[in-house]
Length: 430
Ligand code: GDP
Ligand code: IMO
Ligand code: MG
Image (tube, rainbow, N blue to C red; front, side, top):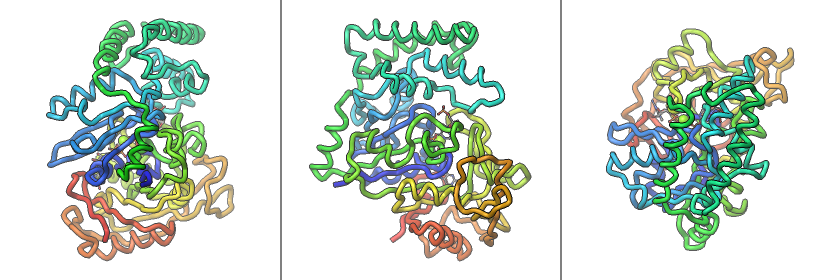
């Protein structure tokens, strides 16, 4: 068997959590391969909403094993909160959740550093979720990070203190003190105590050599779905740098984030929202600052699942989408939130850019909103409620035309259509 991959093709929040939950019914294993609690993946099951940050979105299926892969970075405090929330819902993650021993840990000082760096950037802030993502991946690549497998070792505290001291020196060099910031509303000392309590609690979750586990599953013909976080346009190499996250969000990240060889990758599901959103700072060529943008945000309920921040909204950017499809090798497109466009007269798609007075159809090295002006193609709206349709046959012609347009432009079929947030509002083609 091969590992199928599911990832976002825009700037995150495409609806990955919802689609993983739907697809996980037919997968034996779901594994997250990168990111951390900067992710917020929303699932709606029978009208009830659940938000996951680190735990894979297959957790509500008892027979599916969920793995937090080595490429993910874990904050024990946030993970423990997620586990507690699941217990309250009658889900026991001790049964079907496993953690890679090689996943790196987010220390309280990593979150502290994130805040210090963001504050020091002034106007050039990235708009980080402040979950400690950048500093933790920095320590991983600088070879001084701490892995989750080390929490059982006697020298864990010693290593923790050494890294904390190193962080304090950096913090002092910015003329900051621990009393300058709060973490999730707690003082540093209170948060650190809670963090250590959480480290003890997460010892209940089985730690594994996930690369061996996953490859063994494949050898035994078990099906594995790799769940991405963030989106392709936030990739540290190919996103709108420096307004990106600190991991490889593209499909290649599955190989390093789970220990799966490139020739073991199967289908690649690329999730595309029917329009675009972005949360945090950075270029967004099709962003709308007018009533239409506000309408997209209101109908689409575009507020961050992790931070509650307003998401910036705009039309679908086909130039960027084609770039993502190329980087990820997408085999199947999944279109989400088409229902948000139900009442729109005209739907616009950006097919080219006017860049420094030249017409181009690729993402230039300098992605600067002042230099790029989108050129739009108009598509007729469908003016129909699609939230209850159950098959492509029942879809309005104008929606089918929109889908066809995307398929023709990207050369990839749309095989899944999501018509609402609930698990049941999903149409799988054929
Ligand atoms: P993720 O980070 O990619 O998992 O996406 P988020 O959960 O952050 O944001 C997607 C939001 O859209 C969530 O509130 C979902 O419940 C919701 N959603 C997902 N698919 C659809 C859809 O087809 N229609 C509508 N209206 N909402 C959707
Ligand atoms: P999911 O998995 C949307 C954005 C942040 C910020 C930038 C860097 O829910 O799609 P970081 O905290 O990684 O240092 O932030 O990336 N960002 C996301 N935007 N969805 C996400 O995850 C995101 N994770 C990070 O807003 O602009
Ligand atoms: Mg999200």
